[in-house]
Amino acid sequence: MTATAPREEQLWSRCAGCASLLYRKRLRRNLDVCPECGEHARLGAPERLRQLVDPGSLRLLPDRLPEADPLDFVDVLPYPHRLTGARTSTGLAEGVVCATATIGGHPVVLAVMDFRFLGGSLGCAVGELITRAAERALDDRTALVLVTASGGARMQEGALSLMQMATVSQAIAALREAGLLTVSVLTDPTYGGVAASFATNTDLVLAESGARMGFAGPRVIRQITGRALPEGFQTADFLLRHGQVDMVVQRRSLRGRLVALLAATRAGRPARPSVPRQEPASHRERLADDGPAPVRPAAEGDAGAPGAGDTLAVRDAWDTVRMARHPGRPTTLDYLDSVFDGFVELHGDRLGADCPAIVGGVARLAGRHVMVIGHQKGHTTAELVARNFGMASPAGHRKALRLMRLAARLGLPVVTLVDTPGADPGVSAEEQGQAAAIAENILTLTVLPTPVLAVITGEGGSGGALALAVADRVLMLENAVYSVISPEGCAAILWPDRSAAPQAARALRLTAPDLRRLGVVDEVVSEPSSAAHDDPAETAHRLRAALLANLLPLLDVPPAMLVRLRRQRFRRFGANRVGARAGLR
Ligand SMILES: [Zn+2]
Image (cartoon, rainbow, N blue to C red):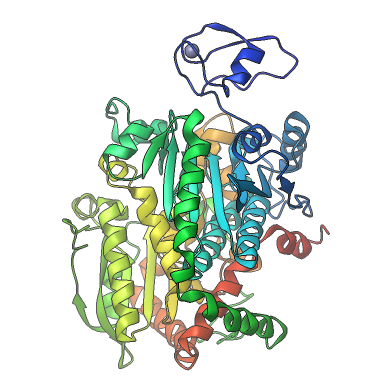
């Protein structure tokens, strides 16, 4: 990590690129770009806004939300202490500043992330603020400009922070449908859940010179692959070379480029047909908000599966993690054999690859045709290696995307089975656009006009899991886990070392009962008293019953209504709602 931005009162600052001592005022006049070597220093959100918008046009949007610590998260420090520290040191309420303004006379809504605030991490409040900014752009019928700077999802808010990737993505999807331009400006650094959602699923992606962007961070990739990384890996020029960004822009040209893009896309607007369609939709949206509660096909604790509900055994979170990773645990192909009939596997992303970590195809569930897509691990080392341990490549995510769209076109419901430690964190995965591949799946699922039912069957690892789990109903097997980060990864960052993984597992609230309480999961499917791997036949029987109980009511819901209800489901993870639920309001 490079040096933090110097404080205003300091007269001199040292360039993180060439170590030249620079006169502060001269540096600022040069937009915080070193006149000696061209290094782009990181900017706080207020300074970034000042550089981009027309003078006098900036109107900040409200940034106060009820404080939420939904997990009561404590590592070596309680989370509220970290929040207070970040507020004091930055003067900001949260890690994003949102505003309306004009850029070259074009009205826009902006959301600018600030890396100084807990590493620009995406928590519930940040997700809520960016979602509101996108909704404001939809109301005002203006373009949305996102400036990203983030290490990823905010660990201290667990799976709820993971849900923000879906919440913001569906707001981006609504702008896409309305024919309104979305632009993201990647600044250094943009990683993890932010990279794998709204930083890359916008219409245009600009990378500021010197920015690095990727799904997995370089340190993680080096650790996992044991390989040295190629020169310039994940830099803006690397991203351009691999087709992942529209352009690389020097800071001094950024405003000018935005003006040109806004002018061009605004000129095209009147020809777009989607404008009149939008009004009745939002009218119905309001009616739906006041109307009946979202469909709850199976009442809480009233699942087709016996024992689902409040009678689950209380097991330590770390023991559950080990159970979820047990090599004997049934895999997606096992379930395709035991729960479904007549599976016909479909292969390939149609772009040059077939990822073995994702399997998918048509099958029957109690005589009804469905599209099943799932991560595939294996029981033996050879199987696990052949399947890349269930870690999907970008080709795997694109195969899943192809099958989801095909299902919608054919009117087939989609059932996903989620069991992955996470998306493939390798060098070639980054080269092939892992972040954007995940982001596009998440966005597409928020608008897919067919029922989607997801089951976390084993490990639900971060963005790779969410890429198959934005669904109308999310079920979870009793001994499965679903988390924004692995306990080991979380321990390595927030505790002194990875040996604190059991504590991290508890703090992350990654078990099925915890996630049902948080509303991330709708229903827990109980496992046989031993565990799934001891009695796969009984597990399959219970899973089948739960799938049917949840899927059948969805089949009667018109597709447009399904999409609306799915959006409501993922809209409710905002900070105000979480804060209210936790009694913090
Ligand atoms: Zn320099």
